[in-house]
Length: 280
Length: 354
Image (cartoon, rainbow over all chains, first blue to last red; front, side):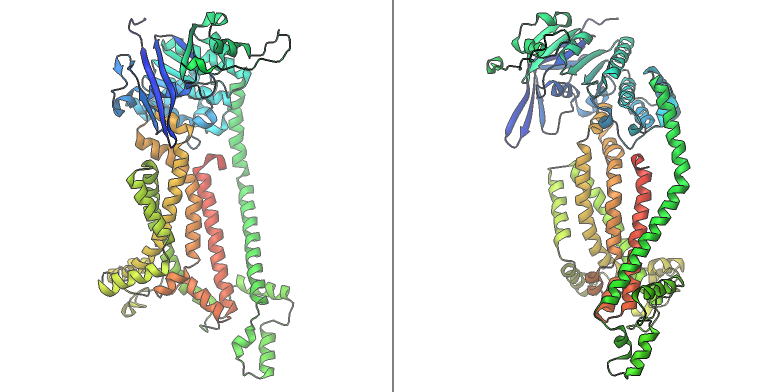
């Protein structure tokens, strides 16, 4: 069932990092409203797309600061929430999948231990029960022999399996919002689609919203309902995914034009042009 | 299906790991034997090519030529050096390390007396260093840039750069001579000397076994200062290394994952980051312990501690080559043993090293 209130309201989000050479603004005046939908955020490195995601979780680097006119998740004011309240939201209601399971899984804890931990942080369940539910979760992400993977160490997994484990772990507390930060960039192209299909399936089953952060405009366009295009910390254009081809902003058009095409004429790809005037 | 294949692959990996166990033990034994052979060979050759005359050291410079020649032959010095080495190895396996010129006793007996003193000192100092330095290092990393961090870093710098002999003298002067809070130099008051049966040679352990608590307290009073001073040194080093490792781990992606899951900060620090730091710390702690077991000549001298550092140094000054060789072998065995120990621990803690 759809709720009438939007799940997430971001109004005037600004992320600043204090550096020895003065403050650096990574995200400026980002606004969007998210329902139970799949929203893509696209941009090049340093455009602020990852920091936007991390600001929502309250997990910026130590020197980062968040400011906004309004930042609310399902009625909870994220700007006013204390650390305990935010931690309860994290993992419980908002989860995040990171890029590369090689680095995002703890190398000295077994897969099972890490999934069980995700259960036990929020729910008061016995070890035995947590184990059973973790095994069920591994099965849900199409891992054929959950028992083996449960006892495996992260370095024994392939990239695709690692990312399935990551999805299982993050979907464990049944979050309402999943932020996926380049979830398929470290994977082989063949595995990519499997993982995306799995992600789609899990989200649909749970009715959860997704923020999909990526540099790949076409991937995001085919997977999401709506796309925000970020450049230098700002949202320069918001599009419905099926209207990508009719994008008006020169940066979005540039991003689309610099993708190679199989049916292209084989000439040099255009270089992405940037205009300082966009920032005004 | 790729998943099914990977599952049985894991299974296969584990069974090969088990099958390799005997081979791995054999490999370790072989490398141990080679290390030991190398260690003894190098020390033996160095001892023999030193421009010191072991015969002269025994018979004195006024002995008759016949006596000199007889001792020369008796020591086997007329043989090629390779034969001498084999002869030494043969004696070594029978537990005969020769006789010390300095103490006129079998070197083995000397070592059994001197080494436990160092072992006791080094063990307590390492424990102090680990129990103090590791938590301080973690604390400094977690509170990076705050005053606690700065304070711990100053302590670290002080403990690491202050000369041990100066700190030792100062501590003796204030805490022993002026305030009388601790006992003075030596391992134990002369009054108690030799009153407990040496089982391990470690006075603390022996007196505790014999339930002689007065002796235990006395020995502890003697141990506190030298162990404390070596301990501060170890603490400073370990705190610095722990802080560094910890900061490195706290910046890793899996820490972000744990926080996303909503793990409380204490869990993030100890269950996630510290378990990875532990992997790195094992090596550092092992090396610290090994270098302390080598005997710290300065500390042993300041506190008149009859340890192996003093023993080897004095033997060296007296051209007492049997004693030097014996002492070096003990130190070498310690190093090899600790290395093996930390290797084992390492495999236990880090699944990637198995």
